[in-house]
Every structure is written in C-alpha cells, then in structure tokens.
Image 1 (cartoon, rainbow over the protein chains, first blue to last red):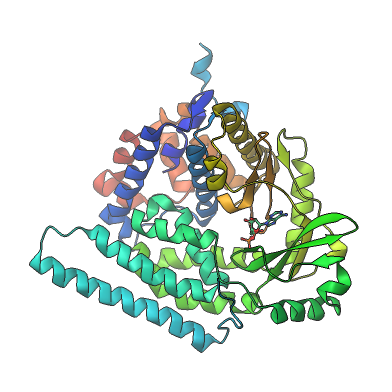
Image 2: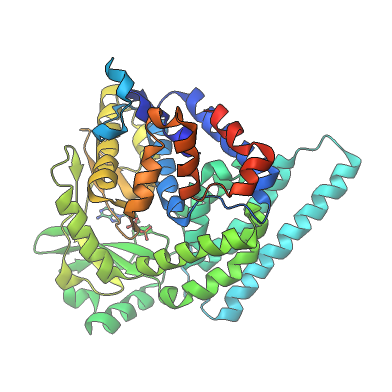
Length: 86
Length: 355
Ligand SMILES: Nc1ncnc2c1ncn2[C@@H]1O[C@H](COP(=O)(O)OP(=O)(O)O)[C@@H](O)[C@H]1O
C-alpha cells in the first residue's frame, strides 16, 4: 500500500485529478484485502503506527482527488532519487 | 433533525445497539445466500449495501466513539467495499443534536455559569453536529465564535464501546483477532485523547502557531478562558466543506491553490513537526472562494515515532526499491512481513512487482 501511496512523491508535480491513479490504488487495496494470507492469523498488516500514517495519506489524497488539484509535491531532499539528477 | 434528549450511555443500552446491528448483519447474510441459491448471478454489492445501512443506523444512534469508529472505517476507503464507505461517510456530517437543557447543564458543570452568562449571545440550537460533540454559534465582544460542546458520557464510554464493537469489526473487516486488538488499542488511546478538549486546546494552539507561515491556511484563535475539558471555544471561520465548495464551480487555479495548501500543510507536519493532524476528512477544512482554507479540529494528532518515520519514508524513495535487500529489511521493520511467509509463497516479490 505504502508503495502505491508513494507515487506522487516520485515526481515534482502530480495531478490528483488523475482518476486512473485512484482506480489503481483502490483496485490494489481491494486485491490486498482478498489475499488469503493476509487474513491468516500469523500475518501482520503493518505496525499500528502505520494505521494513522496511511490513513492520513488516504484522507489527504482522497480530498485532493475530489478537488481535482494539481500540486507541486514538495518533499524533503532525501526522498528524491539520486538518479533524477543525472 | 429531531433532537435527542438522551444518549444511550449505559453499557447495556449500548451493547444492545451493537447486538442489533450484529443480528441484522447475520440476517442479511442469510438473506443473501438464500437469494443466491435462486439467482446465482446476484452480486455481493447488494449484500454490502444492506449491511452498511443496518450498521450505520445502529451506530448513528450511539454517537461517541462508535460514530467515530464509523468515521475511521470510512476513511480507510480502500479497505472497505464501496457500499460500506458511501454510507459511512455520512457519519462525518450528521448526527441528531442534543437538546437545549443538556447543553446548559454541561456549561453549568464546567463553568458554574450558563452560556448566556458567559457570552453576549449564544445560539442554543447547534449549527453543526460533529462526531463527539456539537458546534454552537456565539458572540462575545463583537467576535463571532464557534463553541464545541461534547456529548455527555462520551469519554467514559470509549473503552466499553470499543470492546462491544470488536466482534462487529472482526466480521466487517475480515481481520483476525490479533490485528484487531493492536488496531483497537491504538484507536482507543487516540479516541480518549480526542475527548480531552484541554489537550485539544493546547495542540490546536501549538500546531496552528507552527504552521502559521504556510500560505493560504487560516487557523482560528482559541480562547482558553472560555474552554474546559468538554467545551472548546474558538473564532468562527467562514468557508464551505469540500462538497459544497465544489458545487460553486471553483476554477482550476483556485482548486490547485487549495490543493497546494493541503499538501504543504501535511508536508510540513509530517516531515518537520513529525506530528500530524491525522483526521484529514472534509469536515475539518473550510474552503473559501479566494483560494484560502480554514483548518479546524486538532482532536486527533498522531506523533510519528522516528523509527517508523525513517523506515516508512525510505520506502518512498524510488532508489530503495531497486535494492531488494534493503526493501525487505524495511518491510520487516514496518512489520509488513513475517519471515516464514516471505519465503513460503513469494508474497514479497508479488508486492514489489506490482509497483
Ligand atoms: N471554528 C469554526 N468555524 C466554523 N465552523 C466550525 C468551526 N468549528 C467547527 N465548525 C463546524 O462544525 C463541524 C464539526 O466540528 P469539528 O471540530 O470537526 O468536530 P469533531 O471533531 O467532533 O468532528 C465542522 O465540520 C464545521 O462545519
């Protein structure tokens, strides 16, 4: 999930009006919910800290999607790929 | 909307609410499967819709933490079938209001005064019902104020509500007991914090000061002398909730501006403050035609532990994903995977190839 939520971070400006991105995220989440081993009692779904961090990004992205906003995805320098510079 | 004169606060009353929902969910499954025998093409969507309606009805009579839980569930949109989340988002806006006498009683308990004695003018009719409180409009010294009054009994009921809600959550979310316990523990501590308006007052003041430099954001001023453990007073902010705002057809430029303010707000909180307004639902933002936006409600603030922060955001850097060993290590740190599973069925490689 985290990986999908990271997509807007990989670019400098992201169009949250892009429904194809959200369709992909929701389809992925639905897929995850159906993966049998995730329901299995021995598998964790990520630490409890993740509950709020993921929820925060979900909520933020859902609102940006409804707004159909294009935003400059400012982020700390260390989150950028070193290769982008080349 | 008809006022409620009392909130079902006894444990038994609340338990029977949940049992009602539980029984109905069971009933809907039976209905679904017997229908399905006759018509095998019947989709599960219809079933989900029935369930969502029953559960929502039971939860909305409860208010308090149960309603907040409904809100949480609706937030995790991707984890729920669409039918549930459509219904649950209603919880973000409307719950029946408390009657006038109960509001006055709350003021007397916490200030020894009536609202009329504290404010120049106080509308006894709530303008907005929120999940664990309701908002009244008031005036003092020429200022228009928003006064949030918490439903009585909410704080005491959090833990018992969640215990009762657990079996329902297990069934709804298809999670196992252990996961539910961990999540519920986290949710419980956050909900208890949310009922403490003294804490909310301090946090609101701290975070709004820290974020004051971000363009286009507007924070209300808070009034400690007119606030208490269950009552919170701040400036009234004009603006519309997202849905109503969109109906005014704002231009792309204005929408981008507000979107940018939202992004910057979260970017700064997460990466600089490392604590975040963890309740980004449309009820907490009031948008205006000039591209500015009011931010309210710091009831739910999540402090992000450093260890979690480092691992989580290392995943966000595309370079990390090109290093399978590092990725795997991070997954383990974040408790996404337990080692045996990873080897057994290549779950890890499936996840990463989906990227
Ligand atoms: N300062 C304010 N100015 C204008 N409206 C407000 C203000 N505070 C709250 N409201 C209204 O009341 C609603 C609920 O308030 P909120 O603080 O979000 O409650 P809760 O945290 O209990 O859900 C908001 O969505 C908003 O419409």
